[in-house]
Image (tube, rainbow, N blue to C red):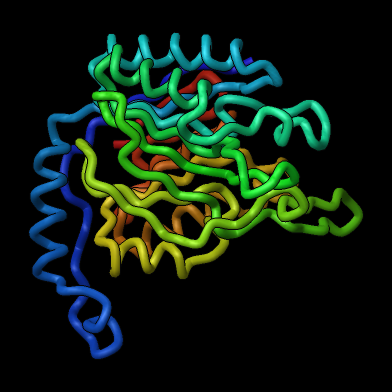
Length: 280
């Protein structure tokens, strides 16, 4: 079981700004984006960020204890923000388990994480929370950003649901118990303007283009719980592609292999198992 933090301190602004063209110009004022990027990345130069590699189980209290320990570790290391993977608070052992524990954002589970952030003085990215849906048969797969005062700053419910038939393998149908989100979300933070996504969204570049060019994101978060079959084949390539296309950092908390991608490099931080390294 892997439960640990990996750290990164930004050391410069990687964003470059493409020459205006007629179709791109309608999306964004590049002088505004450039100013925001330079300001955010300058501020982020002194900010340390942590990503958690954790193995969630079907025990909410146990997962909270693990997250609390990781938060304490991150704070002790000087991190101002900790990013947790998809399903950080619960992973069911059988179909339907997640529906039984789903709660609204003002329920006791999320409020415990808000209190944890406030008491620890750290921002939290909580990717893949089982938020109660519009009926008892559905939940929302929701990415939640909590600030260091314990306030929910932004939420994003996963738009692209994992409905996949693997040839010769399993059939996955997330839509059978999850309702898709409708709105894209971005929010300012100590490390820059964050674009929020979840796992399978990674295969749909349009949402990343909108986050970058319409919502002015500089760092895009992709908390994930990829399956072995579908993840091993494509996930690293897709993360790098999204970083290159958007010229954003792409931050991927995902056990057991975590990546932070820089658009001008292959990666800045890569961690496999208990090994973390920063290429020079």
